[in-house]
Length: 141
Image (cartoon, rainbow, N blue to C red; front, side, top):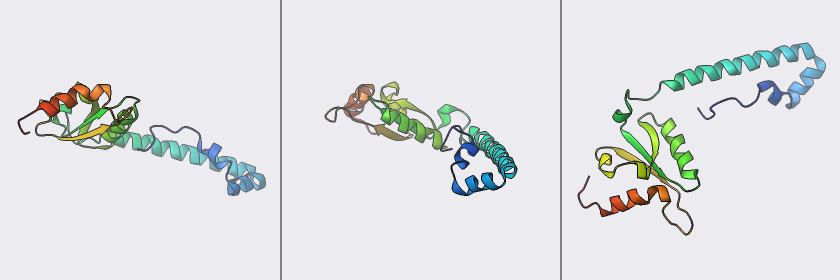
């Protein structure tokens, strides 16, 4: 889902649309009934989509996820993007900070990295240890 929740009623949006403004002026009772019906319909669809999205992962246990998603971020930008990606990817569990992952656990997993450099291109703090360990690794995966 692109949006986790509906922020406003549909009627608040529609009341700014020209054709619905004209309808409300000409037939206020029909307009009000239409607004209520559309609001119910949109909320019902959103609930249904949330129910479908709740069980869409392609595995039963987080350890069975085929894709690892790791991020390094100072300001949270890469973290948000990584978490959105992880939520949308049916083969991944959660997004983790790079320093919370063990380099040896990457073996056999497809891993997607989201890194937002800071300052003059420096590695963010929550990725420095992982990057150093990965750089020092001599054996192949």
